[in-house]
Amino acid sequence: MCGRYFLHRDPAALARHFGAANPTPNFAPSWNIAPTQDSLVLRRHPETGARHLDLLRWGLVPRWAKDASAAARLMNARDDSVAVKPSFREAFRKRRCLVPMDGFYEWRAEGGRNQPYACALRSGAPMACAGLWEGWRQPDGAWLRSYTIITTAAAGRQALLHARMPVILPPEAWDPWLTGEDEAALLALLRPAEDALLAFWPVSARVGRVAENDPGLLARDPAAQPPPELDDPPPRANDP
View 1: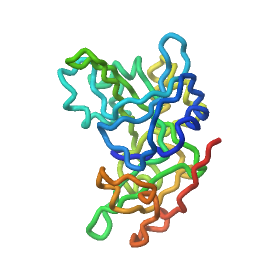
View 2: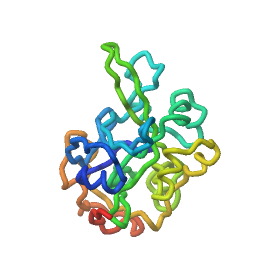
View 3: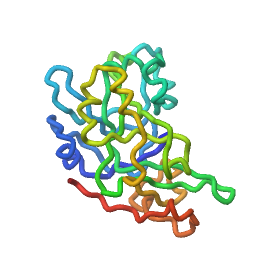
View 4: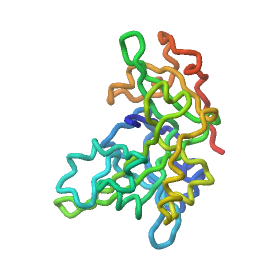
């Protein structure tokens, strides 16, 4: 699963990196993004085809939903059911997106407690995770636009933390994901990232509290005793 992530990079740098054509939305850096909060999503404009970087709410609300109460439970969509599950299948066909993040968190049972870990690209570049978005008309007539992050079976060291991981798309897959129409080809893009591209390190248990949100959350937890394969140096952010 992917239940917390961080995105502290300058939105203008993100817009350049992803080739967004619209004015850059205001977005405060966050080291602890949780479901039901707003974050940046890259979508394809339905008329111009241009990439747009927009603020949407995390936790998908299907177009047919009676209310938004189930949004937090739809923060993730599984790759093996995303094309058929009623909550996601229409968005999979028509409203795919990229979810930028600097990295994500996952928890591992160690010594009778859950130790959180951060995961980021070794290069320091932002991740582009496969996602879906949807528009839902609220009772007052206003539109709520929301998104979900697609997960796949974990591989490599990620499997030591959790059975699933977000789908991290390489740059060459961005356009096929945003514009493709062949279901089989789209599903083929939903696979785990190469293990060598990722860095993992233990971080403070403070990340488990949504109210905690500061750069210190990404510092290595000095009290942790992780296995060597889950103790990489935290990468420095890099804007290609």
